[in-house]
Amino acid sequence: MDEYQKEAEERWGESPEFRQSQSRTSKYSQTYFAAARVDQEAATELFVYAYGNSLDISSDEVRAAVASHRAAITKWFYDCSIDMQKMLAVMYIQDQRFKEYYDVRVRGLAQYVHDAIMAQ
Image (cartoon, rainbow, N blue to C red; front, side, top):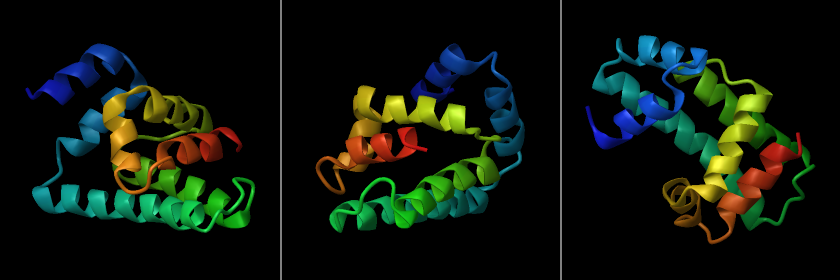
């Protein structure tokens, strides 16, 4: 078990979302994982576009990015509720690994994604 898998199990192992994700991903080939990554990256690029164009977090484009983000998680991993998505948004700014995932694209993107998700 790798370091991230162990951490996820320790943090969320008892949650229905974790169990659902484990059930789904245990059947995935590398091709499925690659497809999941494409969907996740596409959702992230919607945020990059919105942030780069200074779109207000209440704009239709940003709301679509938030919906795309949640849909990608739901499609590939677990049923992601708005409340769960908001918990993830907090991690995006509090956990350096998640923050870097966004901020390596554009400095400040993690905070923008957080704010956009929290505004829904």
